[in-house]
Image 1 (cartoon, rainbow, N blue to C red):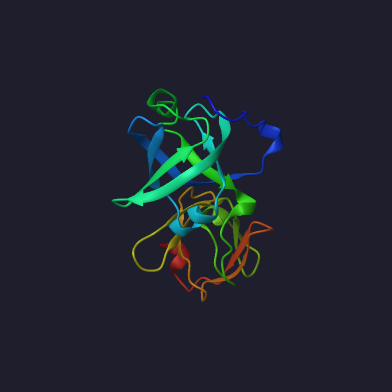
Image 2: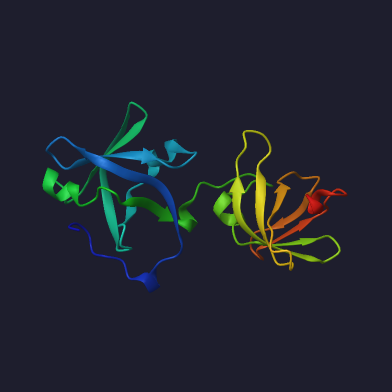
Length: 184
């Protein structure tokens, strides 16, 4: 990749994906990206993004301009002034540092914050770890990879009445499961 210097893996916090480069646009080095964030307005305040290539290489990109066109994000980065240089960005995930995420309100969490959290009952019984959050159109569900000998996963609704404590700093979720939920 051309452009800004590559980041050292040990000098960077965790990254959060906000877009993925789909293709080039025009001949002046612009790219079209699919938006991966629930906060597309966040691009107005960004001065840089971190491109993560499919092979894992990371590179800081300085944003010269951006705009939305037909539901997609068009970006122009400093140092990418020709279609040939912009082509190197196709397939890259564009990310921000975790510390640059849009702040959420009390009791709100990003899905990535819940992943790999330990899940236990209010009585301290270990259930497993969150593998993913499943969006169903209604109440999201935690897919919890079981630590029990059954080897099966749990599907736990991400509802305040059930997930009574969520501590993302300690990576812990305590659940007060209604009778029968853990047997399903």
